[in-house]
Length: 93
Image 1 (cartoon, helix red, strand yellow):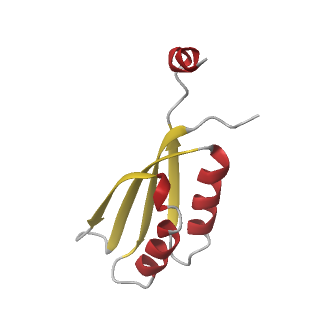
Image 2 (cartoon, rainbow, N blue to C red):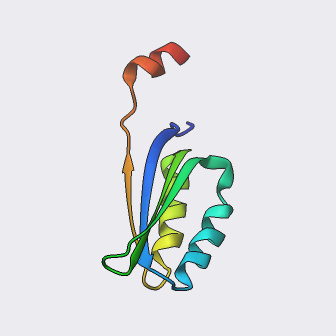
Image 3 (cartoon, rainbow, N blue to C red):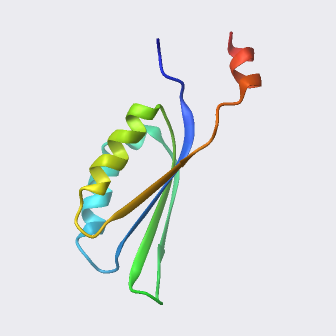
């Protein structure tokens, strides 16, 4: 059975000016076909940058992305997944 494709937002924070940003970009470029959009916000207050990506993926793909990102030193990752709309799944049947 195929896993449902869901929309998710992945929030990534890392020390501003660190090599972590290059590693983050390298990893997410491997999954670029899943991306719908992104935003990068450098923080001036606490020396931390935030990068957010909006993706459409199944839970295995989301887990692969967040798992790889979470292994980068200094990087923190959090994801939020929208619930499946039962009305939409009935339309596809």
